[in-house]
Image (tube, rainbow, N blue to C red; front, side, top):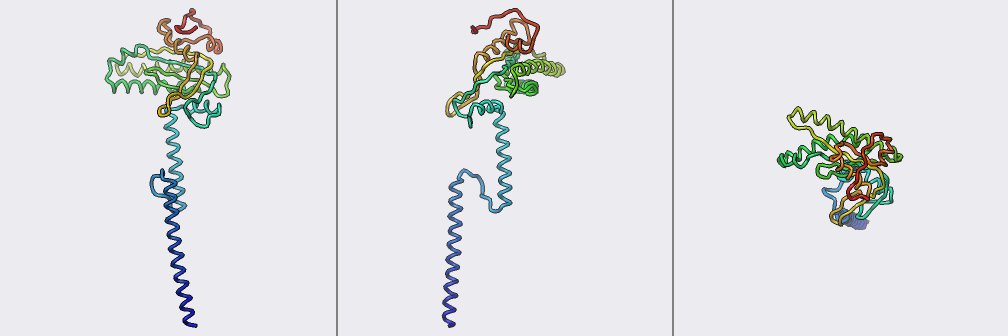
Length: 269
């Protein structure tokens, strides 16, 4: 009887050892599989629920930071336009049509101004100028599509708004830009710098918003005759000695009463 009990004890012990070895081997295999599946994951895997919760929060913060960083290059409003056309993500060739107000703002005499500056001074000047001109656009429901040298191209889409509201947003932004420039010139005068002048062109109409480029270098863009007209209106401000010019559709929508003499836009039929 005693011998039988000893045999049973030995069998149970051996079984326990085998089960333990099997479990440890299984855990190692699972960990190896997880590391292979999540090979892109940097750092150790979480061992406890508390570590998981901490890691999840860290990843969420990183995702938010990345989203905010990306929006500095691709405006959220631009992505919203593509999403309305059924685009799930940004891919080459996506396009959406919409009616928006377009604003171009350009510094007068920038070429001569830039030639008198060192490269680092030029960058500091542009960033200082853009920072001041950014807020009037955002405060009037607009967003900057791109910076073109010293020029600003902005769009006003007023989600859910009427054509009149979109045009009014763009016009108010243009007026506010002139106020912001006046304040900036006061600051420049105190530092001994000459005042800046700008030209602003406005237009309202159909545009195509989309992505262009190649598979390894893609950019967002806005094209259409309305964009070209807004740009050409801005260039006309020099010849007509005006700070702000708007074509008929935008002017009529906003009920602008002061009218300049008719002018021909080069390249426009």
